[in-house]
Length: 205
Image 1 (cartoon, rainbow, N blue to C red):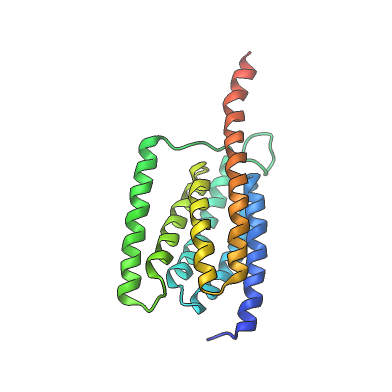
Image 2: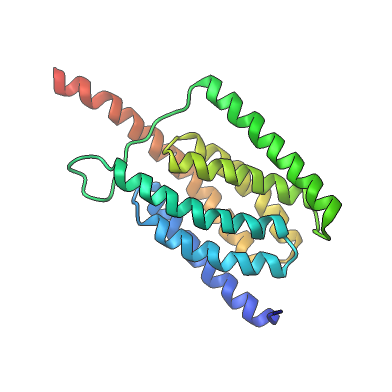
């Protein structure tokens, strides 16, 4: 089934708005970000497929499953006394960072080659680099690691360029807004991690 451009455009705006709400809730570590994320990425499965961004379309299916998984993890990890709105966060160690970087690069390159070799995808390596980094960022988000924001910032910069090139202007605008929100999210999670480290010391004093 092929949708007309007006319908696709309307769906894109709805998906973008849901995505903004998702990121806003994520910044403040609310588990309800996952509900809006699932709704947004479900629409993007269709939007990206219709625009022949197959790696991005397939990535959204992964995101649906990853958000269900992440939601379950966050529910089990919420801080006592904080209701359902807060979960603890922390950094990776340096060895883990290097492993994540190597795996992300390998995934992106191999996916790009597959898209180039077996599909008619446009910009397969750029598309796959965004997809690979997004997979890594989503998993790190589920584990509540601060580095997820660093990856999302890199993804947002690349995605804005790609989506403008493909004429997906609402989505490009969404990712530009997400870039600003990701910078804010990185700052907020760093501050939250510092508060977590200081709190036990103050309690013991």
